[in-house]
Amino acid sequence: MKTARKLMATKVLSLGIALGVAASLTACGSSDSASGGDAKTIKVAYQTTATFDQMQTLMETTKKQFEAANPGVTVELQPVQAEGADYYTKLALMNKSSETAPDVQYEDTFKIQSDAAAGYLLPLDDKLAGWDDWKLYADGAKQAGQGPDGKTYGVSLGTDTRGIWYNKDLFAQAGIAVPWQPKTWADVMTAAKTVKEKLPDVIPLNMYSGKTAGEAASMQTFEMLMSGTPDWLYDYDTKKWVTGSQGFKDSLQFVSDVYQGGVGPSLQQALDPNIFTNVTAEWLPKGKLAMALDGSWQSAAWVDGGTAPWPQWDQTLGLAAMPTQNGQAPGSTSMSGGWTLALGKNTANPDLAFKFLTTAMTKENALSYDIDNSQIAVRSDVAADPSYTKANPSFEFFSQLVDVTHFRPATEDYSQISNAIQVAMEAVMTGQSSVSDAAAAYDQAVIKIVGQDKTQAAS
Image (cartoon, rainbow, N blue to C red; front, side):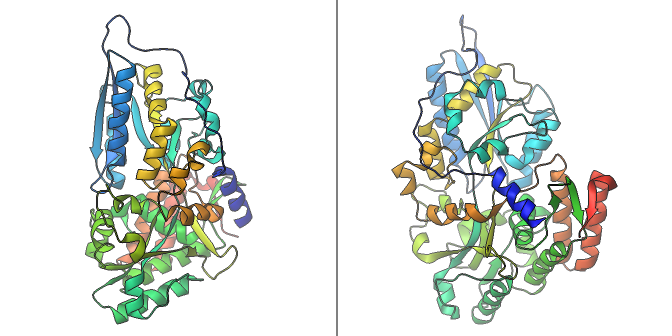
């Protein structure tokens, strides 16, 4: 099982942080630029938050470039200010009507399968075949945009990995030697307990949990933990969801130990919808949090021009890989995801919409976005550009985690499974359920979601 999962991870992302040669952007698909003075409008929906304005910058830049190159065409930007699951909900509501559905949308890779199956997205294969830059994209990035039918529905903006950000100053005060690299889950817990004892006013460890945190809880915390066990959620060989695994229970137990053991945020803090902003803009910069299991993009908020500038971040914070449960090979683990631009199924101008997408994805725009948003580049020419490789001191660390990273099961049912994971996490973090009862409830939820014939008991 573990070997099959790793092979799948390798297949899903050969990130190819390899050197490449830039290719010039060429026209793609059939021309659909404005003609005869007829006004045309391209509606573009995307996410913004208090600590994420890089997409706003990219979209404003692209709008200016696109309208200049296509006289008579108007780009209507539709930013959706919402965290996590709220963005997915609002985007789904927009897509339910052809009147409100966007022509171009910012699409999380884990939503592509379900949104394509729901008929919200337009397949892009014919258009991508005529776009020279497509060959510059890593194979894994291409596969991340595929729907359940094997067609491509999204073009990757970049990817990410996850690790443990830790405050070196707080560790020193607590008597923990730095640089710090835990070898097991027990090492992480020991550090958290030490911080709690020595620095009672500091939150020792943040790991997102519960329904409020949404996908960040199930993917960034739970699946990060479970990927470090011998078990996994899904068997790629049999194409069945796995129930009753010890790895699932052990991962839930760690979540319970963090929250019921008092080494995480309070329940009020953890279930606050603003927790993402609190971690990035308050707790880490102000020394209120010792460790954060979080993503490669975090420093985007702290760099010069970011939403929460913090000039000392790279001196104050250290980085450690998340260890496997008992230090078993390969010793550490990570989770990867990423976002794409996709076209709405109901767009009246698919050629124009695709031209907007490729304008946003030029090397120049991709380079700027990947640097500004601390993304792992998926275009070979961007990955090889000296300005990218020197832009951020954390890029090298997070790029190395590609070798041990894992991915969410890309199935149509995943969104519902993810929700069931969040329910189980919230049940144990709040103490409303034992680990065994929460795991059993999850198993029953999975069977109800996918059917008994698409599940299998752990071996």
